[in-house]
Image (cartoon, rainbow, N blue to C red; front, side, top):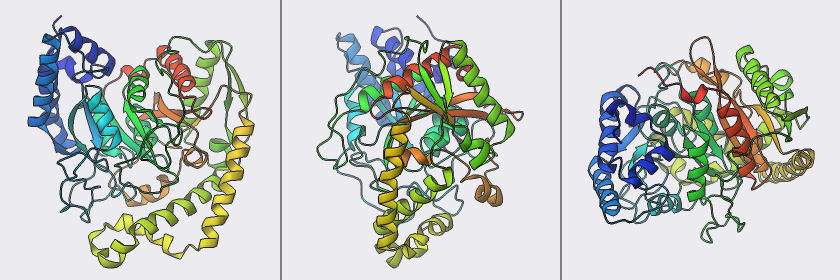
Length: 468
């Protein structure tokens, strides 16, 4: 089977892996096609901090040799991926997009997720841009520029996994790793019109990933389709005894229920997040309602539920995140404050004024809200909510950044730990992606994927491509 060169960047992960394993597509040709696409377009998007052309082609050549020998390297055989540059790779520095780490020596080992992706046959194409230490951004006073949105380079691509989101949406890689402490997988998925999952807390190892907040950090997959995301989680999920937060819970086949549909499922919807707690842009609210109508048309029952207000979730999350982030950075903040960007400092320094009592109170409130939320969804199969209140804002407008960056409904599920997926459900009048979240019970990512796949199959949003 031959593939027109212009189709290579937008092959799905699932399709590319099958073509390579069958010998119908050379991994080297595919990887070179993506590298050429990056060369042609990433100068306008800055999604990559480091492109590993030589080693990626060597890894792809090894995948082709394996095919000729009748061997399969794994479910990701010969398919390139990107890593947010807070994730360790042996022989490379991890910069966290910061001057603080710009001169650090190379890492001596791979992060757990790097090792899993490579072990499944994946080809590491490069390290992607992030907000500084996954918190401060989009910043213009760092050693590298911030990533931009492929749908409109004057718009923000979401963060902090900004480069991963932009790279996947632009067709530079079919899959990438992001991290999510207050929504940082789901924010770029929302802004860039792709699929991003924050798994259940403890489902994916964080070993070898620069921490932001030990009790809120998650690592998750970012792809263009639901099936690709499920395949990627199959590789990433599993217990890691060297990550203290890793959960020793059996791993499902997350692709097994993708064709099961939603008929008979009972789905909750949290409308007060966007019509009372914060008022969403009309197009974002209507896109959610239309998505609910699609799911109802496919046979799901939709019921409205109430939870704690967004402000309560956001305040609790903020106290925990800033307390832990400040503790992680306090030595560097004292010794090298000038090496940080302005936005990072503005976001992390309030943590210096939080007390031990504030932190303990937030932990106690977190436990209560988590218990209450899980009680409220016990008779449901999943929950639907908005992700952002607005489409992507102007990246160089600091006033819009200050206003719209906090206008989101993602932090509740970092606090509770429940799995949550963001996926496209429309476009606004400016051609920018709109999105929704699907939230599940703990360790029931398979149900989230089942619902997401049914919606994706009934709509065409995932088929659109940015105007590069």
